[in-house]
Length: 109
Ligand code: SF4
Ligand code: SF4
Image (cartoon, rainbow, N blue to C red; front, side):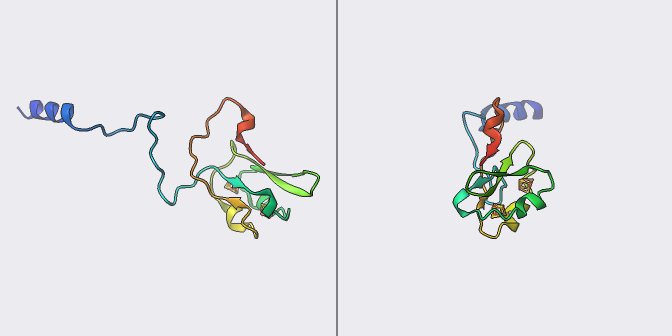
């Protein structure tokens, strides 16, 4: 009898899961997602490159000076680069769907 009650309960109660990717939940406030970067705020100090534990940041010269290039496929979302950046040029993000078939989509300049 109890089993029948449980079956009926589970048949008619609302869904407990999200139908990803058609439905996407909102990450919590302290969620660490894909990084953003504002080149105009960067002074090219290279601190982010030095602290990154995953070697996800390379420095390159873009004609205006040194700047970091972020390889998201290597990023472990520790956010040390954001903490150390003196100009707040690196921005925290909420994007969590970073899977792609093109590697270039995982490069942030
Ligand atoms: S969040 Fe961490 S792993 Fe990702 S780029 Fe910044 S320092 Fe490197
Ligand atoms: S720490 Fe900030 S200012 Fe320095 S190179 Fe990285 S992004 Fe640019």
